[in-house]
Length: 293
Image (cartoon, rainbow, N blue to C red; front, side, top):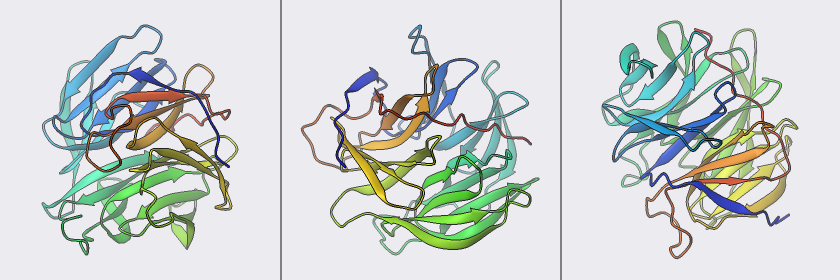
């Protein structure tokens, strides 16, 4: 179950809260965000080591690529169209959430619909805080689909597009939903996995071509792979304590990149958090679907 894999620091990003790594197949580059302190979007080419970044005006939860070009970015107060070439940022949809809840991670399903979640900033000081949730973007409206969430994490879509995974924190669980590809309707909610007490916390996730669900266990310094039936398949120890989200990339989509955070969540004394790390776990990933709107 525990697999030893070489993990290297691929890029010294020095992020306070690195999140949402996304591989651009066309550019052969890794994109990601530093959510805060300061809020930024980054792009790095492993082949040339070229690195670009764009300051953002508000806390940045994540982004997706658009089929029409550019990015759709989840800032704390809404979804914004962003053009990296000009730096232009324009509001598409305002967040329906109260001011203490910011939009957080996002993901497109295989039909190009956008799904996004929120972060209730009263959590974790208030362990009962749950004013966030998950939303589906329909036209110019964010439709609530999963309510009463503290921090949206673990969002991923199965390779066949028929299952959506989401973490309804503060529970130590990831739930699975049947996803209707025609309508975007969710049904048949069930517990997909549960983290044992004392072993870190659920953070970001991705899937491989075999349907495996890869989870970053922040605070535990580990990546875990779960089979489509929710069984723990393998665990990869990491030389840093706070992985936040994995993403497959590289020319063969078999390099797993992992963002990290310098937030004091896990044990100290390991290789410094905040960088971009890479490993070759023996699986291939699924390229992200671009936003179709």
